[in-house]
Length: 563
Image (cartoon, rainbow, N blue to C red; front, side, top):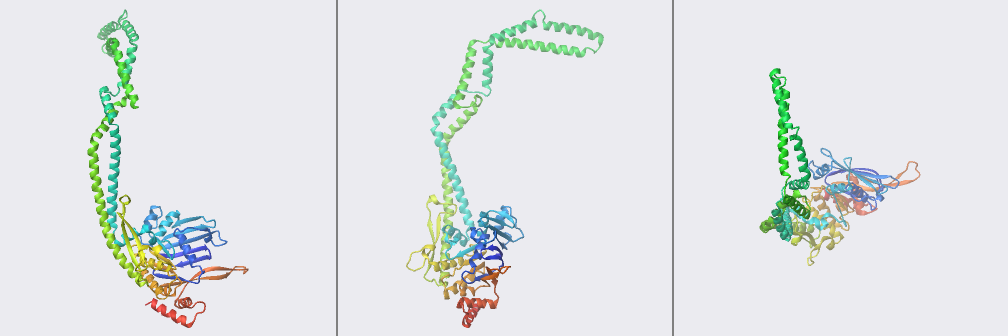
């Protein structure tokens, strides 16, 4: 609930501290006293549009804060916590600073927040009902949510949402599969040709480099052969390396006889060198044989290399990637052959998911239908008590086109009213007059209070244009509403004011400045005791001149209000 409102430099309010209590609080005062200023100030703290006109003349800025006492698991605390504002164990304090140029800043528990977040949070804490305001109960988009809350259908809604999400997921997968199959089928001839072409070619990883090196070698085979021959002559000519090493080893073996192990290391080195020379000479012989290739081999290597590169260019890949590309083409070609079966499976899944959604939506429709009838009866009873016994309230459920089905089901929900027995129901804001509208709103709010758990409700002259028994009935309903919520009412009706648990009088006061040069008019708010309250209600009954009869009438109203 709202426990404290602090106002600085708002229009005619210089400094004001208001302490609020639970229950039914009324604010009264002469027209122009500044009651609307208090609501404007409260609106600033809950995200209402900031206007430079609200800053007191001569002040640099207006500063308004509101303190709310909330349970620890309230949704607002969780929402603020997600934005880095911790409120655990503390009241929630919303503050708005409005500069004279119209710019404003918002704070929650002294941490800066966005105006958007302030508005979202404020909508969950305070709901203002005015005679001509466009409230949530007046907006068709909110009717479905309110009906579901009234029906206690949160679990069913979760089921509908899950079924709808599952259905949409299958629909998306099937649409993707259909598009893929269409693209693949369009390319089927190309895929078959490409797969066959690469199957005939049979590319191998690393083959391009191998063929390129082989081609280079064969193109220079004569030069290579001449070089090899020169190398072999050097090794096997007059200075035969093999024979020289053999002679060296024999001489060293003789030395070993006289020098024990001193020559073992050098002998091992020469033996290794001899072995390496023999291996090298063998490799030269083998290379000489390999480079002596026929011209047909060069032609075949070039033809193979150029064929690989041509296919790679056609598909815009590297030669080494042709093998992977062939696998991909085979997969896509296989998908053409499997697409019919896959699409049949997805079609079956989609049909099952759609049926599951329809079944869940039918269950919530049945609950809504029953809840709608109960709501109609409850509101009609309230309307009768509010002297609208001929008025009728109707919860309208209309099936949506399949294209408009959504996560909440297959229904459109609208609250309709008829003010006369013979008239057709229509939208509340188009059918009801100003006075009727206020009573329709109050009747709805009284019935839906538990389903719309905003802790603080403000009614700004919701009783305008009403008097006598009707005003008394409005006061009764507001008092009953205050048993479950904090209700603040700005009223000119003595019948309503008498029903309040707490009474505030808003008035203008002329206060002299320090130098007594002039006087300024400020709005003040005064809590009333029993005697002062009697005087205020008597004034509301009698006008400027309060009579004994007016005081007696005020006593009777107060006695009835407290009975």
